[in-house]
Length: 306
Image: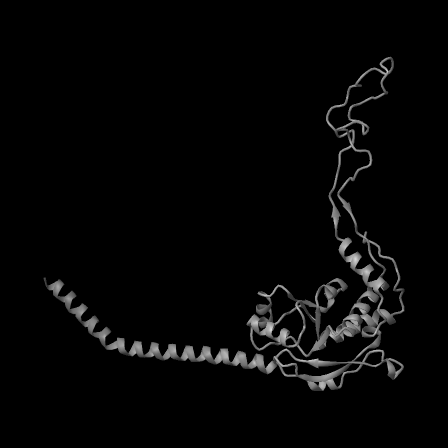
């Protein structure tokens, strides 16, 4: 009994201690939770402010842009407006010079056709296959003797002359349709497609791919207000897409984005409007001008690696 009374007395003292400590613990917990919420809010606000602060229109870069291999004659000068995706209104933030050797090429529909045909065929594999007379079942016995029956001479019922016989010159797949266009024709195809898009007012240049909201309706309203058509291709100099733009494009299958190193003739003609960033324009001009002015042979044949 004395042992039980001591245990009850110790339990009573512990409950009294808890009653005195609970208000302090709850108060400190509330303070810490409020501090955590305020810190998380401040972090989100700081990240939004950093993202908005990172999007600053570099007008100095637009104004001081220099062309590589500048044209010899001033009459060959080609210019284009630079707009922004951060506002629904088509506000112009500057104007830049475009190289006439890239964006001012005479339209060659035959070169575009060759590029399109090559892109559609070079990766296709034909799996069609028919059996020859040797692969058909049966037909090992001569159907009748050689002479004396008055009928034509035959050695097997699986001959191509017979019904249900083997094929003589049918497809024997898989057959690859791989071939490569000459490098110069591929370069000229890119230059021609870019020039045709610019001449038809279907090529636009923006400062960056920054959009203020990840709602896909914002992107639809922006395209509709600027009359950019039904399908849209966005091109940047690298393959890192901004998070807001990636979330908005996931729900719009007609709008696509690709890096500058993947730009091709088929994708440009497949989409109604092509939008290039300023960095993508510089990258495209740099690479194409390098291949136009390099000392090596541009028309060299393609050889498969051993």
